[in-house]
Length: 265
Image (tube, rainbow, N blue to C red; front, side):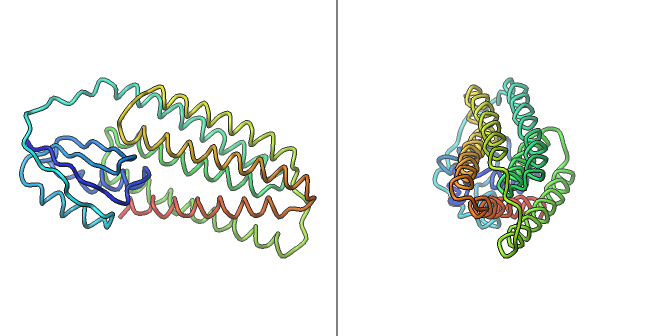
């Protein structure tokens, strides 16, 4: 057996990890994949020549480069922690999807584009966690279909959101309810902090767990942004801070959706 380490220059979120997993899914000579997203490293345990794997990785155009290739002894890869990681992913998925519904509902009634946009970001994260769960025991074809329709749905919703931001910017619109913006965003912040705590307690080096921590940390920053926008709406007595944070988050959602769509190709 060989242990080959690749540097993946553009691997910085769960989308790239899932993209790589699906690209290599049909390679029976690959025994195990070990990701370190923070270091942008992928270690592959496999039989046969390393250049076959490198060739497949280069097709993804993620800046793959072989940096180490050594012979290693046969390894029995431990899967005892898989159930624990699956439970954590289910918990984080449940929290994110619940707050997608909550923020969408309150964002709509409070006329806050910041809350609506943040709800779609929560939905985007839920999709990533769901794809990670689908990686266990599901077919590659089914996983690609989920990625495809999820990506299209996110782009459609985000584009509708951006069009609404533009409409409100150029027209007269009722002010967003800043109290609702702040309260719901604080609750979402607490929920994301709980998710991050669950993920960190796992102390796992598996890519989907590490990637979930990165996504959740980014969500906390977005929650703080929406809270700040709510405060600025109150201080300035206009809707522009809410529209600005909404536009920024919608753009983030579209970027994530495009990455997810790559998984369906």
